[in-house]
Length: 206
Image (cartoon, rainbow, N blue to C red):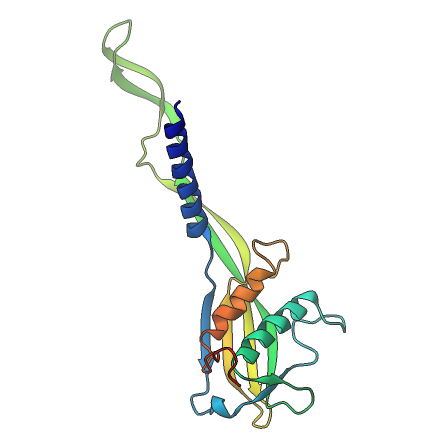
């Protein structure tokens, strides 16, 4: 194989690899709800619930630490400041688990005795034998249960004692060994705050 053809094949395979990598990238499924009567421009300070619902056994989990860091970055980018003890907003996180089922359908294998017409070294004619099923035979399905996790972000007006914003991130992965984690957590939080009523401020603007 000549050098130009090798170079061409290398470029083709590189392009296909990039295409498949992009196609396989997961985009967080985010839904939000908020109180339309709330004036978000009046909020200047926030803090996190203590303990968070993602904490356990009386200590702060690694997941909580990552969620705090990612959310604090998003809120500060929108001009809010974290204070302890007298904040206007309180942020909390909760993991919700829902049992799902994946259904896999395949053609049912069928082999049995039958008669057919065909040829061979003995000539053409009717004969008996073993025959496989046609593709249009009935199918079988296998149901595999699994658990889907959803991260809920609650932002509460402490004075009013009511939620003013809720973000739901479906199929949320909290596994540190998952692809692009912990950056996956940061991407999920960033995707949720894209739908926050306050937009990020320009760099240098107070």
